Image (cartoon, one colour):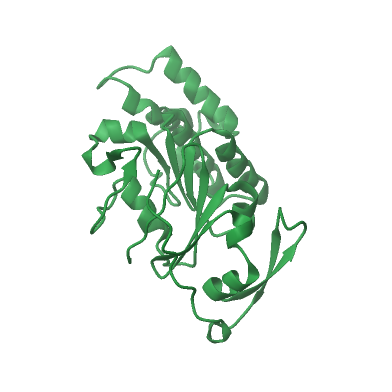
Length: 254
């Protein structure tokens, strides 16, 4: 990973885009403290996330991973209630407020009818929605979505991104689907080989020449320029133009 910086405004939905191995998940892991940056810092407001204590960090950042561990022996409702743990006293019981927040999170993710099912028995898409419900129940000002559309059908991909957009939280999402990014993100950060190569609105960043350079595919823009929909054609990597230079203007997180 090279030096890579960007900023997200409060309440903004920011999509991290780029080919496999471009550094999307690595950047997100520094935000929720799964890895320590080699240099520089990651800040929420004016606070370095490494200076936050565990419970304080969990109240600040909620995370939905692309392949979360789901082999624990818990029901859906119990799993969603784990999102309330950072807000409870140690070994405290779930309050009526906690139960209502979990109920609302399950309703928003269409998992309430699964409440008594064991998480390990669910399909991949159902588990993803349960993990989103747990993250929503955490009610943190920053929500990290690491490839959130994994395992989801088309309808639930759009439901998830629509839900994230309506939260009013700062959302940072690593995405592979450029059409989802164009439709739901306020801004996108395009990564290639560990570097930020472009940052701005989807309309400004996701131009066919840029997509060809970074992803090695031909992109055709359908629909209105202000709301692009992309169709792709495979292009041999050797025929793609060289990667764009890193954007020197961009700097890091929320």
